[in-house]
Length: 183
Figure 1 (cartoon, rainbow, N blue to C red):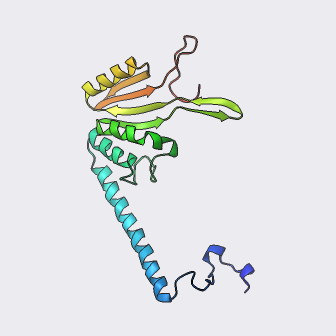
Figure 2 (figure 1 turned 90 degrees about the vertical axis):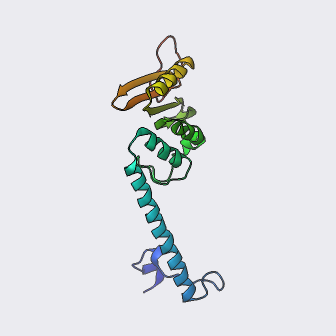
Figure 3 (figure 1 turned 60 degrees about the horizontal axis):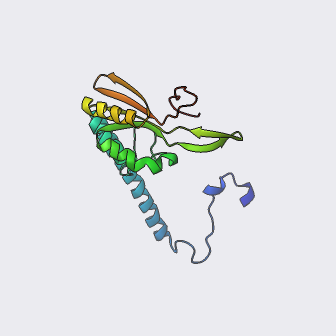
């Protein structure tokens, strides 16, 4: 059967290597395969360990520390589904968000303020962050500082903590700023 009519996808077809461009022997190929398998197994062990760490978290503070580690690249698994780290737009904010988490403010969602174009029209994305705070005194202090800074603020108290939503808000002709998203 010719190469062009092979039933195997091109990535699965055997390829002849040029002299000196690949493993010189079958033994070297086996060694490369073993190394690849070892990396795959180690990644599986790491993921299982990280899942157990999240499952063992019992307080907002426990989850905040794990979120800080994830933001700093020390963990690859996060129960929010982002298993390869924060979104690219979040990377410039990662250190600040990690510091907030280590201070006891469990960040949940965030986005930077950005100027962009959408369907050929100017578009402004509002910066915002949502968080949970277990310590009532810390929640009150955070709300007070946010109000002093002119941030739009929503604080809801439930169960073990307070949910705080902070938005960079600008007033337009006396109207209240929307919660998040585009202007």
